[in-house]
Image (cartoon, rainbow over the protein chains, first blue to last red):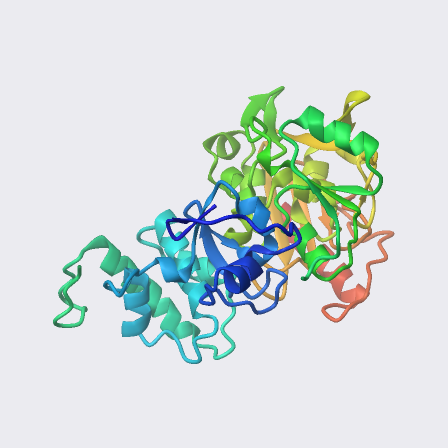
Length: 165
Length: 250
């Protein structure tokens, strides 16, 4: 399997969940594990570009597929991914535990709906739980991320001095 | 390690999957895994063998046949949600899919898996029943068609034999009026109760061990829904009456 563009061997143990493989074997601890039965959304990663729950997959099932984790969005200290940038600007995180899962879900949402309606935003993030209840800021961040995605030089509501690279 | 021990098999064809199912004791088919993997993680399911059908090519088609739409074993729910064919031939299915969990779950979960899992509170078995659809079951003994009315046997129980794999679900075209309405505590949760209307037919879910057909004029008759933390039996019966009224008012 490819994880963030790097070829990785599948685990020997077929019982290992993808979430545990990413964290324990590959050291990619940005993927968080909350409920481990698909409810909280913390462990969301991209599988061939579409968001999925990594706790509801066996790691061996990812063999031959592309996995993107939160670490794969902004690599090597390059500029933040537009969704990360938007979460930063809109203060869409408090304790941060749910954030990687939200960000990956929103990346998937914006790929499906580049300009989501309010209802599409709500439905797009409904599968992720934030125990700090920062949902209002998270909704704003989704809209902001859509702006950042659609234009690298958003002027009127964007912050000054952002390079947009 | 969350799941209990199992032997993992990844057959490359449906025939190979059937061979495994006919020779192995206590084997379970793994499709999207959005219900089975949680059950493994909780260790509520402890199959000796997992037969992962995700490596099988050519079983992920959606196509029209016999005045309806056929959905093969590995079609993800998200693909059905986005399908133009489904939207044109069976828009009731499109509407129902949007009530199944969340998009991230639907990216992985399959329609056939949801039907084979037969959760009493699940939307898709009730849609299949309301429309009078069917499934195709395959084994080394051959292929057979099972009508929705003869498929659901109990809670999480179907009439599929242990050596059979559900390879296709067929949904008849949904002619107007149709609707699917459910009540749940949170968006994407399993429904406390729900109704599917397909023309003059009514199917209920979440109120009996299986989805059931009901008389639209007296939908709650004979039902004995369960009690849990979320709803009392009386509340579920109330919901069925109200949701049926809404479905037939349209």
